[in-house]
Image (cartoon, rainbow, N blue to C red; front, side, top):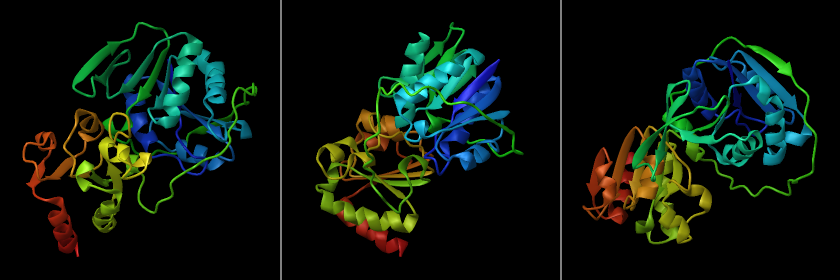
Length: 309
């Protein structure tokens, strides 16, 4: 029995989340191979071979996979599927794009965003915005799974395992990459940051997010936001933390002016330490916070900024 884990990378860097996904794969109890598909990504394969638990890395280095298009990725994975009982990927934007296609082509149901592995066929996943945990037992010979990486612990390193080059699939020209529009920032990426400072509708405007930047810079933190702040146009979409945004689990999460709607809590309640600053003492965010400060954020944040100096 063998598990295939699809590596998350950008052709330059292997995502930290792969080590957490490997924790989930290891708990299934099967031999584990990692697929690295991309362009000029030999170094990515080298890094993947050192993840504890992997027995083999399959490298498909071809321009066809440079932009991780769902159609080409899915065809490649399906062509390899006969050799694997379990196919896993991180529940990222990329993983959520190609894995449903893999499941459809193989005619098996997908088990989405697991947060726990009970045994090789039984998994837990959140439903109803995280208000309930569903236990799913698969009776299929082949399991297609996406992993909510923040719910697992990162594995360590090992001596490099074998890397095997594999042939690319056929280009059926079902889609093409046009361009990327990426927000550039010197701050950590939300899903990998150890500290996150998030603002909500209580920030009142996008200009007021500047006062959070000082705190974030001093803590080496990423900047996040609630859906309400994003919908109001305060900050770009890639700041959004929540069920329909990014799911995070940093060591420290500071929620400023965020009431704590269910949708937002579903994306950050697994954070190790949660600090909430809100002038409404009845705000739901205080129910999950480890530390709460009932105060006007426009007074509290400058005070915090000064204290950090």
